[in-house]
Length: 418
Image 1 (spheres, one colour):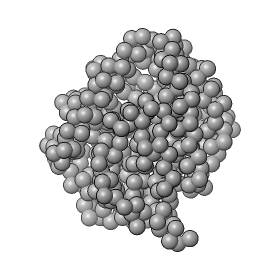
Image 2 (cartoon, helix red, strand yellow; image 1 turned 60 degrees about the vertical axis):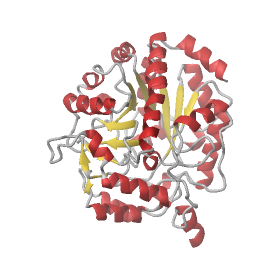
Image 3 (spheres, rainbow, N blue to C red; image 1 turned 90 degrees about the vertical axis):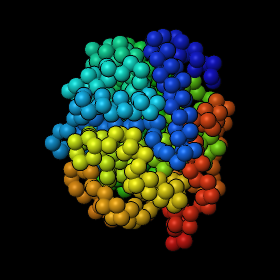
Image 4 (cartoon, one colour; image 1 turned 180 degrees about the vertical axis):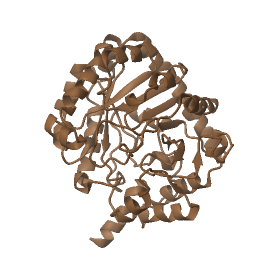
């Protein structure tokens, strides 16, 4: 599998982009995680991977979206973005996930990215604004990978995303990237309406034939003002998705990413381990994109002149979130114990960072659900490369040491009430 994938990289990708990936994301990314591990030994948390929502606007209206896409447009300024990246770069960070809204709707997107050739950017996008010209600019930059969202067949995509001809427009953007030999990925938020269509070998084989280099299967999370709970996967489906990813990683010449398991198959929450946090378009620092509460901002002129380093290292709200999350579950505390998260928000008087101002009410309305934590049914990596990489650069970093499966976690509560 590794030989076949290496052959694909050499034959199907621009060599300069491949070098940027290997150096910026590979070597420098590993060093960034090593610095994170050294900081942890001193009780300091500055996440090596930052996810930044640079705009709230989007042309689609996806079911269960938690972003205020219909609100007045807020686009992060190049000045604020450069300052944030510069301060994070001083801490050794090189990777930034660019999210929205729809990032390609940002009127100055390339002004944000161009000043940072020593970083690596992954753009989460629906692909519909990626013209041939923009794909050429991505290739010229070399340190940007678009991760294009495909949510099902044409009919399913239109229903899931609230518009017409969604899939065909997205595929146009995807093809523009591939035609220009941009290192490109495809992601899917697995839910009831696309589970059978996209979680299969045929779909992966099609992506490989097209020239897609990596895939990412998220699991749908019922959040926001219209959470669409009926789209949620069952625990058995989540386990099936994990099995599929592990099997295909050992078989197919395509990288398959996941963010919720270590090399031994143990569940984890990236925010609970401190490896990543989120910054929204207004500059608010949040534990993760679906935890829309904040106590700090990246902007020094909003009542807190401290550096980004000091805000992360000394945030009591973020620290207490990590402590609560990792002492309660190895999964997602938002899904499993929204009541405890609400208590934490009340304790710190954390501000609702949404425009709609209903994040607390949304927590109140949530039912207890299982997430990736499925104790006793762990599935270790079969591919030695993934297991090695995760063991060193993507694991729980000791965050769950002493964790006893949590009597208050969703699996325990649901078993008790069944």
